[in-house]
Length: 204
Image 1 (cartoon, rainbow, N blue to C red):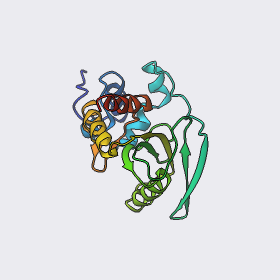
Image 2: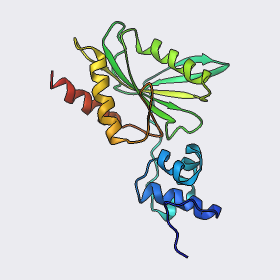
Image 3: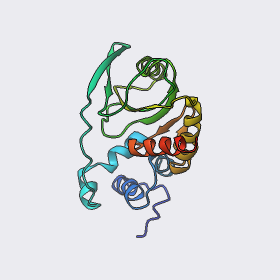
């Protein structure tokens, strides 16, 4: 029997392979696969990494998370949430015009529930503590956060860099952007974030 990968299937095994096919062969993002199959985004992620799926599609295993240089803890709703400052992420300077890249994780430490760009002129530590509290209060089971990049915008308002990042990343990762500059189910490469910021800085 011929199956259309873009139509919802009934058989559980077929649906699992459908998720993997759409992800690995069609390069669809988790949000689009969820829309097609009716599975939650977290379920789509789980199916993509099932051992038999990985073997079938000859997927290269995902490397382990990077060991942070420094970890601070945000205690929120009785949960200790590690804030992982990754190597070469940049200096957290209070009062600096800063644009940043954070990645928020729930139970899955390999794929962020969302990547977040933003700005602060207070401090990254203060802003991140606020965001963890906001997201947990709104029902996200945030269990850890990676501070991937803290970019010094110099004398230019950080919002200018943020707007440029938002425009390009929405184009590169369609249907994943949500308000407050979160990209759901997307692991935005730090190298890409840096490249966009440098590109904008060179235009000034």
